[in-house]
Image 1 (tube, rainbow, N blue to C red):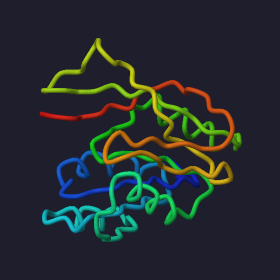
Image 2 (tube, rainbow, N blue to C red):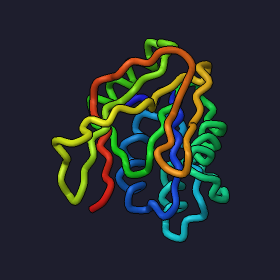
Image 3 (cartoon, rainbow, N blue to C red):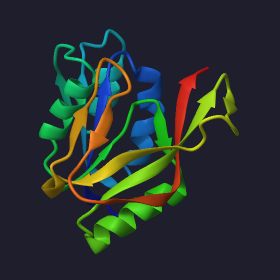
Image 4 (cartoon, helix red, strand yellow):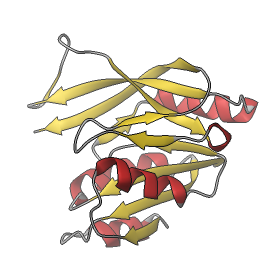
Length: 170
């Protein structure tokens, strides 16, 4: 698969097990992966090095602030913001590639499905729809308190097909 001009922004702290799953997938199509790490004590740094990630260690600022720091280090015009415990499915990857190839200057929401206690949740809050794919010109930024931060950007956004699977608790 040819890499596209996409930066993937991730924050981490001791996410070695999740990075082992996520990085092989996104490194296939994204030409830049930016990881802001809060001084992990596991093997996160070495795993990131295997995939040529831009791995930056920085003191913990809070979720929104840490994610904004990741955005600020992204070099590409297109940014996909992911949590380390999220995996895009093939349909979502194809949608992202098509959007970037068309270069639609918009922002895009994705459908997130939670995998909880080793089961994919079928009810409750499924799907959980979040803005995740943004063009830099729309001035994306994370806002919010200590938890439940939210990515916002100027202009309208569309929901794209595919799933982002969130592996919350095993």
